[in-house]
Length: 173
Image (tube, rainbow, N blue to C red; front, side):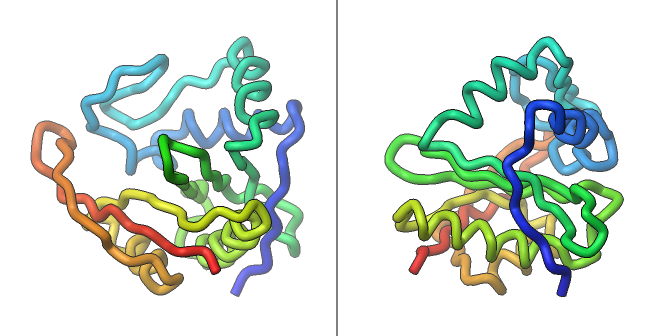
């Protein structure tokens, strides 16, 4: 299993977030949803992250006690491979994990999740939630193997077609 650490990115490290968010292969999972927010590209799932947006994003995301955001860093190669986060959404914490397409399938998601659980435990968070389309079988398998459970299903629309989604939860012990 890969050895990773979670590191709070410096402002100057936001190049990696930009690289991930603007890479069609990395963001392909995000394509085709009917959402409307700044810089979203329906066809690729990419989200623009121009330098002039970095300061506001950094101040909002890195200085809020209800948000945790970190890069996933491979200890051996000293390389950023993705990012992971959780944030308060109403009365629960929603989480997300993204592994850059260059590093997918190499065993980074599982150890990154385990590090995220440690951070959530330190902050006394009871549970983390995410939503994962059933079509993303490998990702869903890792989540379930790491103790998440499917608490409900929902239907979203991707490229105009129904896409069944698992709403998952993991209690933090």
